[in-house]
Image 1 (spheres, rainbow, N blue to C red):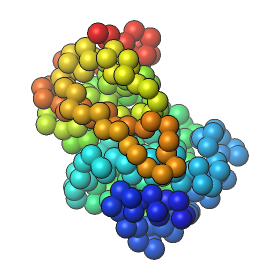
Image 2 (spheres, one colour):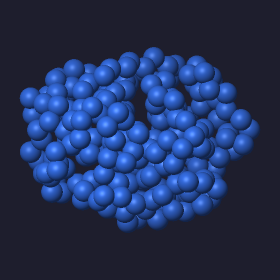
Image 3 (cartoon, one colour):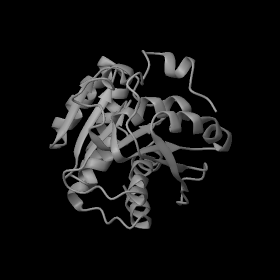
Image 4 (cartoon, rainbow, N blue to C red):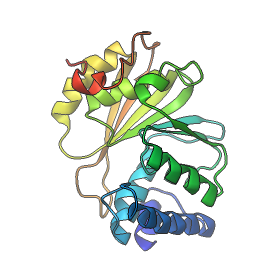
Length: 237
């Protein structure tokens, strides 16, 4: 795990031996399960360390994950970025939201295997769970990574944020136009664009950044719209 250890150090994070062991177990089981179900196209040892684990930890450059903070990872897939973040910040109350049953089975297994506490796994679509009173506007931090283009991702995540909370989208590449197209959605859903934080880490050379949105007013009750609509008909500027 040398790439992860050195990259985390660049972020100001000194991983403990116990945390490093958990990342090793996570890598091995991710690759093994990936032979049976499609979890990720990235399975190379060094690439997983950089493009999954370290990429997830970059969230810590934008927000401090304090004990008791409620965090939701929307469309978490194989648990990225939620599981790496809770390995490093075990005091958070993490919710992993995933619609695909096979991936949920992996998440359930992985949470138990790593002995992670205060982690809830929710099966369902963000468009539906976003209207559930148990989850709507209940989180200080909502995360999305590789879920959808930003205008749709905003509609899938901001409804979960409490007023005063943050939504962070982990993005890569040239996303200037994507950000511009998302401005109306951000405003309509009760947010404001706080910062686009570029990331410069050795081994992550594909223009990765964090799009940080602050929630300043409640999301109108009609959002998110029904499943599939945010992606098919995004709210565009």
